[in-house]
Image 1: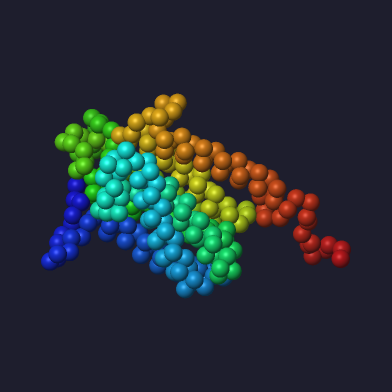
Image 2: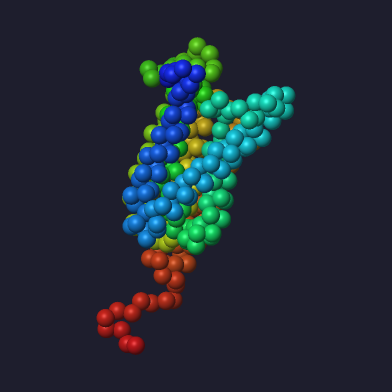
Length: 262
């Protein structure tokens, strides 16, 4: 693993931080290019990216600290110094989305419309983040006897599942799928809810290969939350889709055709 890529003077470039930065920059570039297609000002999208990323990182750190409070209560100084590790995607997702909601109201942009635009790139950013985990040697997998198993820098010399790569590959699939679905969405907000459903499924699956303790029903805390998130998202999609008829029109409201009477 390569937690530190290189050093220039007193500046050390960490692989985790570099991957996060690359994910943000590439996602921002893609969003800037695609924003006009959704009739959204590209400059406003960049503002949204900056705000959601900044508060998303804060939320990711806060949730990680809370989940590991036994350690941080004894080492409070380390709460503020993450050293490019110790972030929870769920915390970043929900605080970042909350800030995005209030920001979109301030800019008078439809939140769900903006969220649909950003959702695929959130999955792409997650893929870059997991690549950073792999290079950093954190969030490692269970011990495995497989041809592609490898050691983790923050664990020991045992060979383990490269679960970070599993997650990164899965996130790229989610990114491609959401990009495909967006122009075909049956209702505004469909892409965002689909992101929640697919991410929950991905995280639930990859947790089986991670070195995490079970907390309830033989599942980890992340698995229980992921399962609930996926089920709730699927229910919302089915309910809303049934209401709008899967075509964007409310039930009982018929479009007027060329031969329709006025």
